[in-house]
Image 1: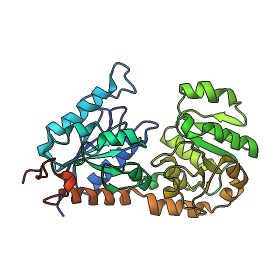
Image 2: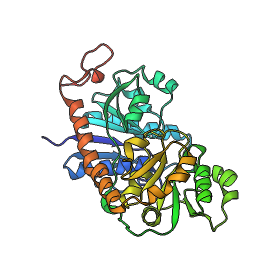
Image 3: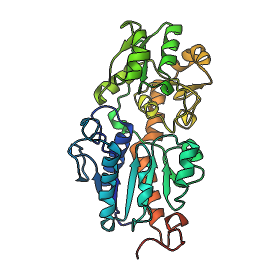
Image 4: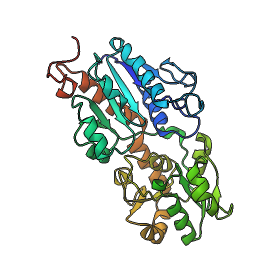
Length: 358
């Protein structure tokens, strides 16, 4: 099959790939580089300090996480996307990575080629009701859980995130600590992770950026001995932390559409202890790569079962299920379905006539 000309539009919050945390930017980078490696002609719309083997179209030298004068940030996101739409006839399709919300919907009926959007959060019913005004817009869900929440708009495919498993090192003999890695928010369950660690008498390492929630709610519980604050981890530090942990704690309080830390930890051989929220059961192979619990009390009582899991088997399953090649395969299939004439209904205009030019 012929190579495709793809405009891949990432966020302009920070560089792609991100210097530290940033799951949307990480996924954007992995997909971009995977598509280029397959021979596709890809243009990445991102910040000027991004690193890619694709063509880079950069309107801004760096992102608004680094430059506080880039305000309102929504305008910068829209202008970055608009640059791709303005050049749409140079591409077969445009794929927009919606870090916050799908501003791409405003361009759906103006764009002469298919414009797909991947959302990276759990949408509310009110959001989906608004987006349903554009039934011809094609969403690519990142889990079946997210696809369920997107009921009311057109989901053209579901593709679980991938992980560059070659860069994550299997560590068969961990150290004696638990790990929480992720943003400090109420929904992430950091306070519950601290409770679990204290109740089982194990050291807990917290790895995330210093934010207001950390300073107000978490910092008073950090003693530097049993509860240790590591700070935000770059990639090398993240791999080291994953590999050294007996288990990753994922006691989320609010459902998430994916949870990238789960396959990342597994790729290092580290099993996960997670609460049954959101897409967790789509990611964790129960009794193989981790254990899913109904509440923190059950997690406290069941950690020994998590520790007993075979780390080599955890790693092998992560490689098999979450390698980048699988993710690229599935996105390629979505793209080619989008381009098949006369095209499915979601690529037709509101009058049901084909929107793409022959």
